[in-house]
Amino acid sequence: MLDKWLTATLDDASVSSDDPSSPSRPENSDVGRLSGGRYRIHGEGILELTPDIAAADARSVVISAGIHGNETAPIELLGELLAALETGRLKLGAPLLIILGNIPSIRAQSRFVTTNLNRLFRQDCDQTGDQTGDEPERARELMRAVDDFFARHPDHRLHLDMHTAIRDSRYPRFAVVPFTETVPRVEKPPQTRSEIQPSPSWQSLAAAGMQAVLFQHQHSWTFSHYSRHYHAAEAYTLELGKVRPFGDNDLDALNGMRTWLAVLAEGRPSAEGKLDDLRFFRVAHELMRTSDTFRLAFADDVANFTEFAVGEMLAEDQESGPFIVQDAPLSVVFPNANVELNARAALLVRPCPPPDPH
Image (tube, rainbow, N blue to C red; front, side, top):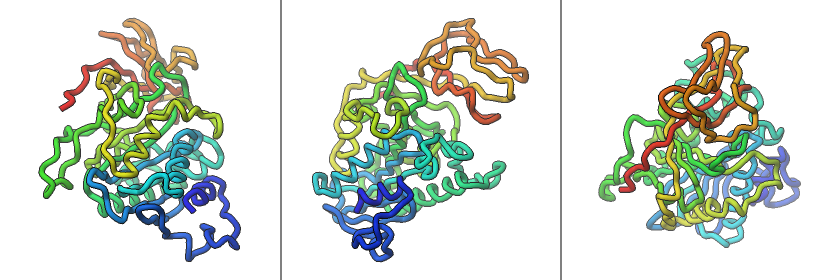
């Protein structure tokens, strides 16, 4: 059933209504059983898994993919996870909310249809400009789903929003940490554990195969930021390689991530890698596309985390003029000159010391 749910969601088609397990049959479409628990479909691309008995180390986990529809490797990882749960190779031991984000863009194999869904996760989005259309409405639906899930499962909140990048990267697998005004603190005793979330899982990220961590410097209304900002969850945007079509992804390179998802689903303690295996960066500047004349002053195939020396020009347009690297070298992440007007065209980052692991 879970495999058919995923396939039907991606293909915009249900299996035959003569099939007793068909997602199109009302009596079977909403709830069901799997090893160790039950599932409930809350809407298109929104699946909740609830264990019969939560394991001692269980976390309340949101796992999302397909916020950009052409980023397929995370969707394939979700397919593997659901297949393992359905066949009993994994036994559910933790509450999970599985989300496929931008369904029309997944079916079209495009980054988005009308506008970038991953800039719309803001509770006051109706007061921030033109917020009509499919993607703004989908953002509202997903925010409600996360709100309801964390209300039902408030302890040990974690959100992994999985992506792949448009271009190559010096660090193909890296985590973006959303901005917050407060640093997550170590948990209080169990009687108040829902009030405070765990410290960041740097060693877990390393064990999952992440190679770098990037700290955001200000609010950016992404899906992972939503969970961190509004629900005090530990949350990451995870970049898992480069955008490729379905079937062309090297999932063996993501074996650490595959293992982490399985561990979280069963409610087991996460493995811990070496902090020294991670490189840490912090955003120093953003490049914004403020006019139609905006251009990036480097080649289209420049990889993420490419460093530019003091004095080099990185961008220019007629409205804001040239941007020249000053004070210290800067590395570029997520450069994209074709974003919408007044949208971010690149992050400019510098190395920073690793955080205190304790």
